[in-house]
Image 1 (cartoon, protein in one colour):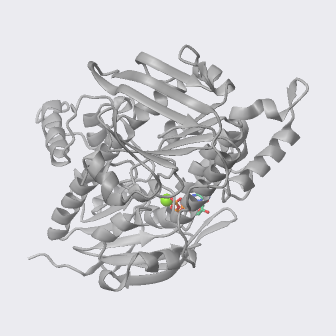
Image 2 (image 1 turned 90 degrees about the horizontal axis):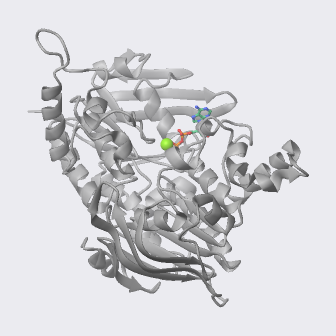
Image 3 (image 1 turned 90 degrees about the vertical axis):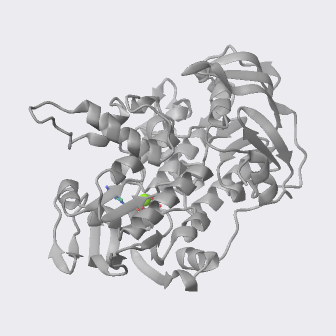
Length: 504
Ligand SMILES: Nc1ncnc2c1ncn2[C@@H]1O[C@H](COP(=O)(O)OP(=O)(O)OP(=O)(O)O)[C@@H](O)[C@H]1O
Ligand SMILES: [Mg+2]
């Protein structure tokens, strides 16, 4: 018989300072066996910091960690792992140039009796783990060849492979499609039945509520509320997170759409891994100046490939792409940017940000020409522009000079969007712009996009949360298997959209 609802890991009065930033201001937090404790909070509230302390990534400035009632200190993740604690990080932490198998067994290789790594056994175990997660990929695939959603599944599989007693999941589903989330939830329920204690962090509030036993809300480094599943709902979470109720906005109105900015006609893009298969299949899409279009679909529907082809990254087999009436099909990525196209990519860690640069540098990077006086870059001008952009996209930072790695996940995403806004695009393409962003920041991002649309910018964004299509979009397009399967106005219902995606 496994014991449940016993406190297994506890933070007492934990304070964490990063230089002048007090990320945690004396937090008490408990994790109980056989239950899910969900941690809610806005970007920068301190959720990841608290989890890093509990899993040995960071040390507290003051306060105590108790494991099974005994005070402990973890000086590394390895030490925490030895005591049965593992963490799935918010930002993907796989080594891209290693295979899936090598990532899963990195640092704890299975050895053969007479020496040497037992690759066959590692491959077998990897395949079993991936099967459990319904992920049909070869263990020998390089991580760099996987899509973000697939990488996230591998990340989860790696954490599961160590059989921890305490499993911390920091935004495990941000890149997953609904069906994969269900698979993960199935696995979580199995783990709970075995008495594993789980901490779950997500900005998908509805989804998180589905799996929550205990809820804790952090705000600005302080715990503002805790409650049991039976006593809480969405409104309770939002109220405690931000102190008020609000929605994600509605389609901007009171103006006419302008000329077409984007015309995609009969576009076909082939799968680079399997040229037999079309990831975008004879697709038509027309977007006018001032119009906001949301593309909804499951992972593998072809949303990312469509946006990447328009931005000049995909391999177009046939069809036509026009920007403001002019073909851009043969233009390079930078020529397309020059002509007014801005892409906010799906994977901000890899494509969107330079991790060694400051917040300010990342913001102004794509539009350095606007920081010039004469032929030279004016540091003063660059700094002023960085400051303007920081306020325009409401980045929570101590200033433009802070290293980008010092920002919370959600704030990093705002920097990626700010960087594109800075180039004054005619058409903005955003692939999952709300991934890992809290409700407050989501509303801000959508407000920002509405504002651009009002100024005549065409906006296309993808999402895997139906509610986020039913916010500012004038038009909602459902994609499935490389094709558009349905199109709706803003008064569609969640059920209609999900049914069209093959999800309901
Ligand atoms: N390495 C670091 N150096 C400096 N400041 C940091 C560092 N890591 C986090 N911070 C700061 O600590 C605060 C809490 O950040 P944390 O990442 O814990 O937030 P979070 O709740 O996980 O947010 P998100 O939902 O965006 O992931 C933020 O103000 C952040 O800027
Ligand atoms: Mg975080």
